[in-house]
Image 1 (cartoon, rainbow, N blue to C red):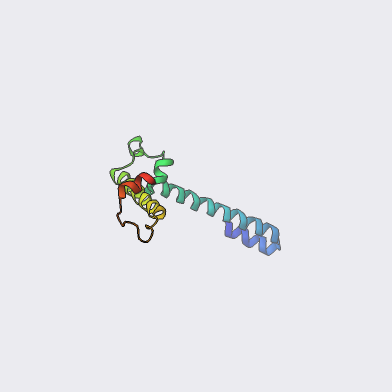
Image 2 (tube, one colour):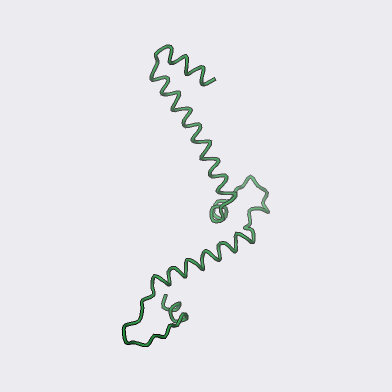
Length: 108
């Protein structure tokens, strides 16, 4: 249907009409892909499904699964370890070389 309309506009020499048709079709296609991306993110991505759950699914599935909860936990642990490694400063030369992870966690 759009192809027939596009051919007719080209035959008539209506370049602006053809451009408007192309832009309208491009917007429709972009809307489709954005909706599909959002839907997939809500269904499969842990943080997105927690923040903006997919409401077309039954209410029981709005809760996070055990796998997603453990993923969030381990992501937090790894992020904490990265932050601790960024805050760590090596001891001064000649100072004692004791390393206390507990003191480092309290310092952070």
